[in-house]
Length: 81
Image (cartoon, helix red, strand yellow):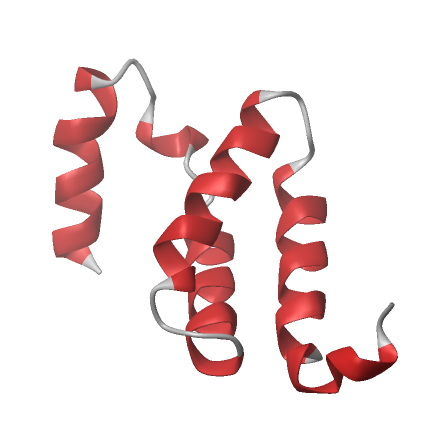
C-alpha cells in the first residue's frame, strides 16, 4: 500500500500527526466491517468516531475491536437492547 503510505507521509505531518501514529490496519478493518455489515457511508463516519475516541485517550486496538464486534453482529441487533 505504497500510495497510502505516501499519502500519510504527506498529510500526517501537515496535521501534526506522525504516520506511525496512524493504526492503518485497524482503521481499514473497521471501515471494511462497517461498510459491509452496517452501511457504506457509515465507514468514514465511524472512522471519525474512532479518531475522536482515541483522541480522548481510548486505546486504538480496543476501540477497533468494539466497533468491529458491533458491526459484525449488526444484523442481529434485535437481540441487542
